[in-house]
Each structure stands twice: as structure tokens, then as C-alpha cells.
Image (cartoon, rainbow, N blue to C red; front, side, top):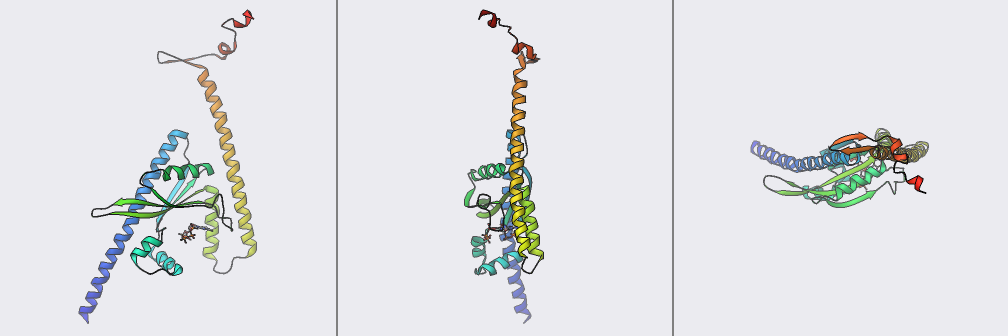
Length: 251
Ligand code: 0O2
């Protein structure tokens, strides 16, 4: 009897090690993608002179949530099936400043050679019936371990601050309220999602307008600068507007 129990325990120990190895793959995948995002963030800052990423949050789905999803979807409970079917065990959420940043970040990620894009769900162009908005990418990336190479699914959700605010409140409402959510709340949430879109669009147009103003000011500044022998000279505006070439007199 004791021998059986010891065998059983040993079996469970080795199973636990397998599960740990399995979960570690997702941790490494998250590390890889987080590094990619960090590089993009720095590059974007250099090119566009602002930081498009407000914050990045990553998580590994808990074994309990994995089990719940497997049961809900009716899959067989085995690691190869979980690996293939549950594609959000490694999840990353990127919160951006503006809608255009979402697509730019998404394109930058999709163009990377080691990123295999499996699925793109655009809940911004086609928001969900309840108002949910976000861009979802399911990608597969290679991870290299001491004895093997694995290709791991990662779910990336990219959204604006307003979309994120909406989604977290909506999630809390559904998570904390076990009964049917009243229709009035559902309607209010939908209205709030529309307001979030209006806010996002307004913020982006202010940002673009300001960008243009900054650009014209810079062009003006550049025009009034002379570089001679690596020394910068300010060119008074009168030089540029006066008739110093005497052309006007000729006419
Ligand atoms: P959690 O706890 O956030 O991980 P799937 O079930 O993933 O195979 P599905 O549902 O078609 O297929 O995937 P979808 O639509 O891409 O949604 C995946 C994730 O997006 C969800 O994960 C949520 O995180 C988020 N999401 C989708 N719809 C909504 C929504 O209406 N409200 C909010 N707040 N979040 C949403 P999980 O596994 O449901 O939950």
C-alpha cells in the first residue's frame, strides 16, 4: 500500500515537473515579446519623438483558469491539446495613447521575421455587440531552450487608455455580479463605449494638430538658422523678407 502511494507521489512529482516545463515555455515567450515591445517603444520614441505606449502588462493564465477554459470548450485534458487549443496562456496587453499607434505597433510586431501571425481580431473596426474595443493578435514565436526549440502562442491585446478603462470596468461588473446584469447597465456601458471612441478621436486630432503647429514652428526656426563652419548663426527675419538682392527695383 505504502509502495503504491510512493509510486503515485513520484508520478505526481514528475507530472508537476512536466507542467512546470510546459508553463515555463510561456514565461520565456512573454520575455521574448516584452523585449520586442520595449525595443519598438524606444525606436518609436526616437522616430516620432513621443512615447506611444502608455503601459504594458503581461500575465500567464493560471492553471485554474486553463482548466476552466478547457472544460468550458469541451477539449480533452492533455498538454498537447491545451498547447494547441488554448492560445492565450501567455497574454500581453499594450495600452497606447492613440488609435493610430495601435495599428503602427501592431504592424511593427507583425513584420518581425520570427513572428508568425496566426490570427488578427479587429474589435476596433468591428466592435463587439457590448461595445468592447481592442485589437487582438494571436502570434506564434520560437523559444530556444537547452534541449529543444518550441513555437509558442502569445495573445497580444492592443488598445487605447479609454478602451482599457472601459474594458476593465466592464470586466469588473461581470466578474463581481453573478446575476444577469440589468439592461440599463448594458445600455449605459454601450453609451460609454461610444463616448470613449469620440474621446479617442478627439484626442488624436488634437495631437495631430499640435504636431503640425510644432512642425511649422520648426521649419520657421530652421529657415532662420545659418550653419557656417559648424557654427550656428541666427538669421533675422528681416533678411528673409527684405529686398536684399535688389530684385524688386529691377521690375
Ligand atoms: P481573460 O481572463 O482576460 O483571459 P477564446 O475564448 O479566447 O478562445 P474568444 O473569446 O473569441 O476566444 O477570444 P477573444 O474574443 O479574442 O477574447 C479574448 C480575450 O479578450 C478575453 O479573454 C478578454 O481578455 C478579452 N475580451 C474579449 N471580449 C471582451 C469583452 O466583451 N469585455 C472585456 N472586458 N474583455 C473582453 P478571456 O479568456 O475571456 O478572459
